[in-house]
Each structure stands twice: as C-alpha cells, then as structure tokens.
Image (tube, rainbow, N blue to C red; front, side, top):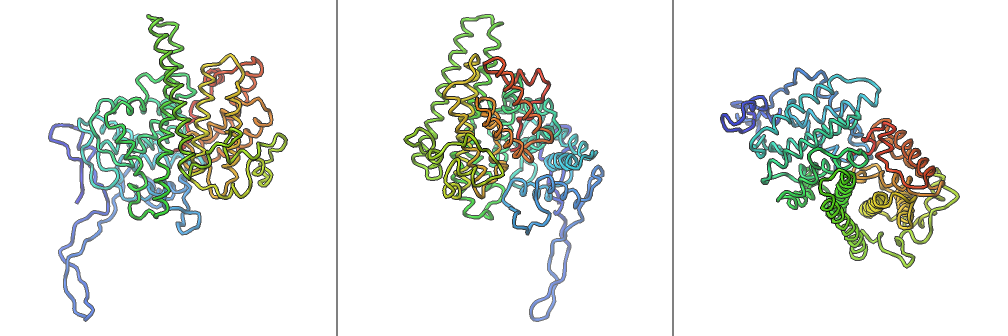
Length: 535
C-alpha cells in the first residue's frame, strides 16, 4: 500500500504528478503463509510479503550501481566494516535514506544528481543521468513550492515527511549539484526563489531538526556566494527572511536535534553528549553569519549612497548599520570570552597574560621554518605536543569558530578602512588565525575536512593570507590551502583560490592599500563559487 500527497480536491491540479510511494518495500500482505512450532506441528499465519522494487524508466543504472556512485561521491567505503567507516554522518544517513525512498522522490533524485555529477567529475567523464535526475528533482521542487499549504504530508518516512521539508532538503542537494559544476547563477536563483517562498509562508512549517539544519546551511551558502561576488541579491538573503520569521528561534532550537533526527536511539551516548556541547558553537556560527550579512548590506548601502535620492537619511542609515555591526562584533567577542571562562570544552579560548589564546601563548609561529612535512617542528612552533594531543573535536570546533570571528573582524576592517594596508588589530588577528590553523592541522583525531569545520573554512586562511605583511606567512598559507582543498572544494578551485590570493597581494603591494576581493574577481573573471565550500 503506498502513501501519496494529501491535497484537497482541486487545490492543486498537478498534485497527481507528485504522488509516489514513500517506500518501495511496502507491499500487500498474503492471505496465509506457513510456520512451524517447536513441537513440529504446522499452522498457517499471516505474513507480510515484500513486493519487487520498481525502477524508474529514466534511471539507466541498477540500484547497486547508483548506491555505489553515491557512496563513492560521499567518500564512504563500500565495505562498511572498515575501521575508517563511520555510520554517524550526514552522508551515511543520506545514503541509507535514499534506499528507502521511491525512485521518483525529489530528495532522492537530487541526491543522485549531485552524487552522479561528483562521481563523473572525479573520473573526468560525463554522466547524462545526472542531468536527468537534476531536472526531475528541480521540477518537483517547483511544483511543491506552488502548493498553498507547505505542511501537506508526503508520507511518514522521518525526518522528511511534509512538502516544506522535501523542498528544503532537495534544494540543499540541488545547490550542491550547481556548485559542483560552477553554476553559481543557478544556485543564486534557487536560493532567491526559496527566500520568496519562505516569506510567502510565514506560518509554522513544523520542520524536523534535520530539515531545520539543512535550511540553515542553505542560508549560510547564500551569504558565502555573495561574500565576494559584488552582486547583491535582487530580493533578499535567505538568512534575512529566516531571521524575521516568527519561528526563527524555534528553527534554531530544532536544528540542534539534527543528529537525533537522523539516528535516534542508535546514536552512541558519547556522540549525543558531544553534539550537546556543539550547540553553543552552532549559535556562535549563526551569529557570525548574521554579522556577515549585515556587512554585505552595509557595503551595498555605501555603493548606493552616491545615487540616493535623500543623501542625509541615507547617511544616517549607513551610520546606524555601522554602529550595529560594531556592537555585534563586541558581543560576539564577549560570548567567546565567556565560553572560555565557564565551558571546559572552550577552555582552549582562555586568555593569557600575554593577551593571546592560552593554548597558543607559549610560542609563536616560527618565522623561519614552515615545513609542512615536518610534523614535530611545525607543531612545536605553536604549542607543546601534549596539548596538541589532548585537543578533542569540540575544542577544535571552538577554535574554528573563533578563527571565523577573527576573519569577520578583518573583513570589517577592510570594508571600513580600505585606504590602509593593514592595522595592528587585523595583523594580530591574521597571526592568530594562522596559529589556530597549524594547531588544528597537527592535532590528532581531528579531520579539518569534516563538513562541520567547513562552514567558513578555509576562508579564514585566505583572509589571513591577503592581510598579513609577512611573505613567509603567505607562503605557508599557500601550502596549507593547496593541501586542505582536495576534498573541501569543487575541482579546480584550489588553483583559482591561490591565484586570486596572489593577485590581491600583488595589487596591494603596488598600491600600498587594501584591495577589494570582489573587484579583483570581477576584473579577472573568477567564479564566486570558489568560496562555496561543502557543508
């Protein structure tokens, strides 16, 4: 028996095209089947019969090859008994989830489109099925967006059960498809339409924690795409719309149950405790993206001031924006200081008498040796080996979040003081970012390429690289970026990013002042999506 979209008659004429079974394992029950008791007697009892799996005529791959393709794209070993395999990741959950969804499910097709494109790119071939799945998923999302009621139920396969959740989760993977191919305009257009759709439905959408988290990731992607793009969205940032919704805080709170929604009681206790410790970090990242959005609004207002009809009011508006961002950065700094004082996992942020991070205060980066192949010497240039070995995932994420705050401070200084080459605060922030990056690289058991660390990473390294005056530091950044981008960015982005950093530094050396990154990108024709990292 199959489940389908419950739409009132006449409410949406195209609803019939969206009806599909939620699970292909649902089948009819046979009248009787035979079982045997321990005493050897037999009786007939009802037994559920599994019906054969249906395949879509548009899918040319068998189920096994599809799953292998998705698995390869998500870097999941085919043998799940291997030591490096972890079943507690977004990729592992999605791979299992699409096996339970029907072939025509929008989210399943979006995942298959993205994974097929990534898989084909890794083999430098073209996969026609990727485009087919992409078009089908996009069409279904468009039709779902036209529903008058976004909470209409599509079935009961948690955590994606209603139209709103299907739209959000499918869009997340369709954006990955676009970014993988460098089609930033398609991702921009989809995110702007999603912002309009979200604004048109201000009521509670009853989102799951899983969908809430993917919605936040889409909001952050919209900011990242616009960060150095030079073009302001025609409508509004998806994040702006979310922040102004009545259920904004509810969505933030629900997003904390992201892993619980995926794995429930199966999630190991130690991971449950670790995810609870990450709640404050997620809040800090959300606040940072709100500040970055405010900076983009400020920059856009500055550029529009020359053509403003009421210059006096426009100047007052810009001044208010300026004060708001300054206060926001101060509050963010205070939050990190407080966390370092009362949260054991954030103790790595504790201040020393020297004014720097306690874990980094003993020694500074070596000014003469940046051999990335020499683990011992590079690690000792920042901290003692015992401290590096004790750095856990939560502490590492606190450091990543703090590096992102320092990045925001440097970017704000570059917006408000473009006529100088650097200032003391920005130079110190760039130095601390490099120290944190080296410490993260040398800490045992922490994967810098994990999606949770790629919310803004490696943007802090890029910003530190263009801000620092030290040629040795910039050379180290170049080596580090070359190394960590292999799986964190789309193919070819590594060379684009490094070339862009060199162009910015060269122009700054020539002018003796800061250079806007988006202007350099526009003049050289580089793609904005080199800053659209995974996650």
